[in-house]
Length: 259
Image 1 (tube, rainbow, N blue to C red):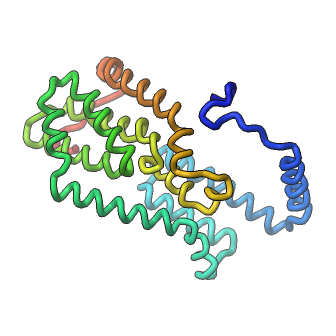
Image 2: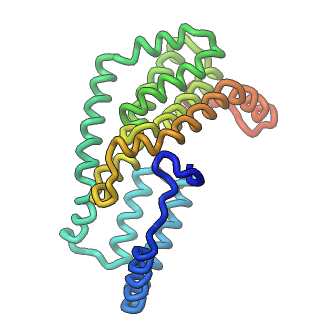
Image 3: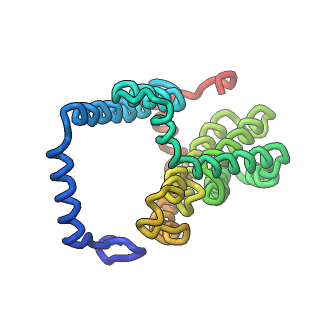
């Protein structure tokens, strides 16, 4: 898509704009004090901590995020609550949409609106359940936030496990299919990915002429490729790969009490 300038990709930065950016960077670097440079170093180190903490699951995600806020504000000398509050202004529209999503998911859970879909999938053959969960989960994740949809689906799958509708091994495979379905096809719309939605509601979006329809159009090639590749992997490689890794003792099934 970059090579052939498809779906809005492959745009070239005008040389005049690049010159302006280079000149601004040169002046900003020359006028930066030692204290400001130390702040940038601290922010870079905090970024490294964020990546490592998330990669190795060193704590709960919320605690990692809180640690980043505490470290960034304390090490950069930001101790005024009004100055801290400005950092959250950009996220207010995004937070409002998250509140709406929470409300929608709460209604879905209380009214059991996903139950017919879940029952339809569970009545299918075990070999077909993985791809069906993947597809239905991906479809709904592109409409609402993928994390919320995945939470509903995994709770329904756990209920099926507790009632004996599926076994522990099948539950483990369904959990992978659900997690994959929430992350790959959900790139179709900004609704599905929180990062896309945050960008769409930010002050940067109107400056770069970024609209909802443009984001959907630019995400289309990624949606097609990720959805197809994910479906093929879930259908044809998930179970054999799991069996192989289990035989190598790289994977172990937890007990039902641990689920």
